[in-house]
Image (cartoon, rainbow over all chains, first blue to last red; front, side):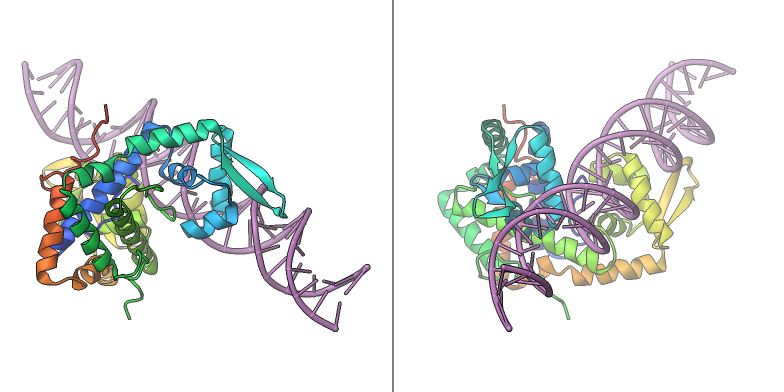
Length: 153
Length: 153
DNA sequence: GGGTGATGCTTGAGTCAATCAAGCATTCCC
DNA sequence: GGGAATGCTTGATTGACTCAAGCATCACCC
């Protein structure tokens, strides 16, 4: 994602700030992944295998096709970061786990991707709480669902 | 970008809120682009050709290789959304302009992508100003530069 | 118990984004 | 005038992503 997923003519200062923040966040994430030889998608998937998980589960969570996960996991597996195990309860399913190397790389990645931490550290504790509240409220109250931005008409 | 560029184990509520917001923003952008038959990159580039611009200029702004812009613009051009004109002052350069159809599609896209507007509309004017201020401060004060998230060591 | 359909995953084909290396034309500048 | 820098394109390669098919397994139901 070298190209930012941002608007171009944000009308208000608040909208501009949202865009700049999102853009900076995305770029930081990409840079951190890159610094560890991963793509954004790979870093994202690796991060979500903290506990054993099925492919289907991941695909649903990430909102993409299962075959996409197959590919990404294959690349992670080729680097010995992730393993596919049989699911004792359902032999169709694969339980994904991180190898020790995967754990290590993920930890290193999370340490490198300090955008959110750094952003928070620019604020007082009170301001952090305020920001979280405002972001939640802006999102539509609920727990971060994609409320905002449904069908327009 | 079906796969979100977000962390997995955000430690504080503020970090979680940032992630959820960024994720929702990105998804909304992608959905809006898709709804108009564009990819994220195409919508982004189309949006930036409000006034005539050079390819190099765009590549720098988006932080990617010039050849990447060449491709994206070619696809937009194939759909008659964008035109390449000769630059009278420099015959190496191409000045990009939107066709009327391009203007129209971009306007429709911006209308569809109402995430930021909708998010803002969930807040009072005072809260909007507060949010903008907090986001700016979190970003490191400066005007949205990628301050936060430089080299870690 | 044996179909029938749903489910979990993979494979293959195709599109697009993105990067790098080369190359062409032009412009800059000493 | 000539060499270097600049603007853009082409070609090759990788990865993400989607869709259509296919295989194996599971779940249900008569």
